[in-house]
Image (cartoon, rainbow, N blue to C red; front, side):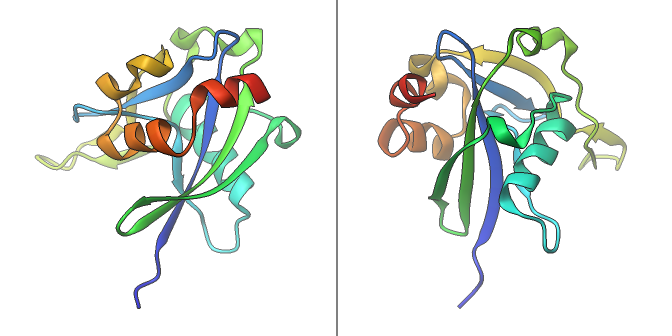
Length: 149
């Protein structure tokens, strides 16, 4: 049986309960900051590293709430953590993605994420991939998370 990929990410909520979504460069969808762990890397370390690489926002581990492992797609699970954004993290014009990948057409290195938005729970399905939107609609309620943080 093939090993399932685990992607680790942070669900960052602002004071109004909106979630931070980052636009995946040259695609139509937005996503939470997340990615695959490096060998031997703890899930929360991966989530925090991906957050920094994809948004420039550095969060201390003690701010994270471990939400656990979620079935995401046929081949992938998500290990998610949640945190409340601090006042100095709300200005998304300060976000910068340092994680680069080669563009399909010509191999030019481009940032993984190229835009950021605070997204109300009822707007998530307009922006996010179907898999992420479904997760927030069925398994992980952003409204409940907002109350618990």
